[in-house]
Image (cartoon, rainbow, N blue to C red; front, side, top):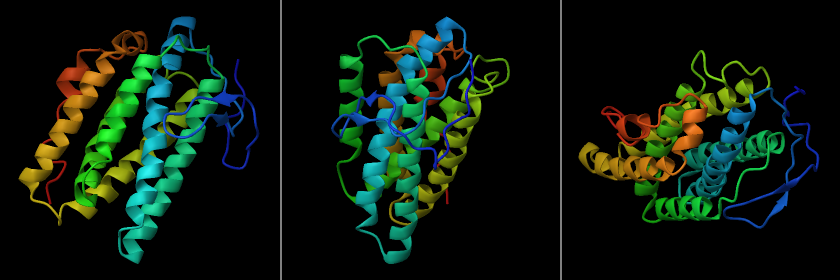
Amino acid sequence: MNSPTASDSDLRVKSPSLRCFTPAKAAIAAPVYGALPEKAAHALAVLLPILGCGEEAAGLAFYDLADGEDPEAGNVLRRVAAEEQVHDGLIQALAAGLPAPPDQTRLRAMSRRFHLELGRGDSAIRLARIAALDSAVCLLLSRLLRPGTPLAGDAALAPVLRRIARDEARHVQITRELVISRMSETSLKIVGTMVRERLGALLVEASDAFEALSFDPHWLQTDVARLPAALYHA
């Protein structure tokens, strides 16, 4: 069962939303209904709240970071923050079209704690962490959407996730360009490596859901948990 994907202008109250950092509120986008097999649909329902927690945190973080930058950089970061908020709404729309996930109190608490830790420190360290995290999101989405996977073949869900992936790749470029002149590559790698290792450990908690979407859980440790060697290379 498919319906048109939610556009930025197609905003309407549909269903309650679980939040990580802000009070619960109604989702603002119309649900997006895909045609995933039952097992894959339940798996995506498990993963989307984790991704949504990250998008919510990113929107808040970029707005906060923008206030400490020069006007030009600040405007760039505010645009990124606005895009992250759009992503948050899109994820809510996807989730609204899926089966209700099982109780995720523990996993959501772990995810919230992970993102709170990313928000500590000065702006350079925070930007370095975001670059590492967003590059991991790009990797995750590319693997989940590779040809032959359940998500890649879904005409309603795949375009939404590909849009998020394209935006996140651009966000990585923006944050790395801002940060490589502020810290040494060695220091940046130390910061980024810690982020990727902690993210890999967090996502292992949802390994069954990844596997149901044709994402090898082993990749969470071999790829997601490893920082790309050239991420912070000038």
